[in-house]
Image 1: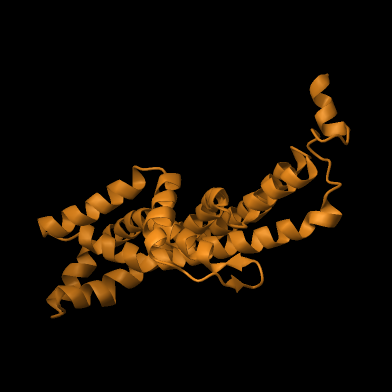
Image 2 (image 1 turned 90 degrees about the vertical axis):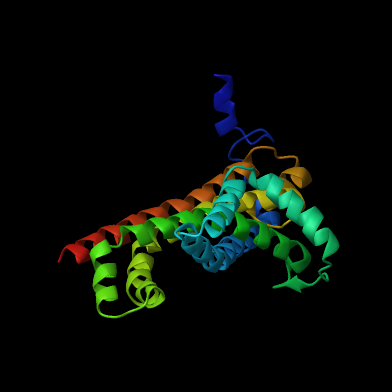
Length: 243
């Protein structure tokens, strides 16, 4: 079969022609570091706005409820690439960021717009995670706290939110995994994450498939064990709640 050659020969069209690795392995190592940095920082920055959006969504004030709903609808209903392009060329076309290299390969002038775009997008999804976590807290606990004299804000801060955050921790970890994959879109703007490294190697070596195969394997090796670990934590948390 013609397609079997893709796996057995060492031509530029082979899936496993990794002859570029001795010279270009650093592109993938730096790409992994950049990708993980983008994902973790973006989700962490999204948490506070997301919590605020979730509380706004639960508000009885129509204006506040509507504004948060509009934000979530906008960012969940438009492509991330479009959002990234508008923020990079629009917002940061006006706001000038000095070119500074962090860790020797992270260009701040590109990294910050990428993180902002990913965080704004992620906050729309994390907000719904928080809202579901808050609504999952038994209503009787809210009523009990109010009967003890706690104000609505004290009840939310001291009783509801601690339980809601515990409920949503696995979902937040899953959002980081999702962001590891979503961050690959930043390669179109020249951010040196994993996908950009694979494209750079393919362009430099004319080996067309193997760099992308290696990138896919690295994404899998990051995300699959992480997702299984999160599932194990979820099972332990459920068992703990039952005792």
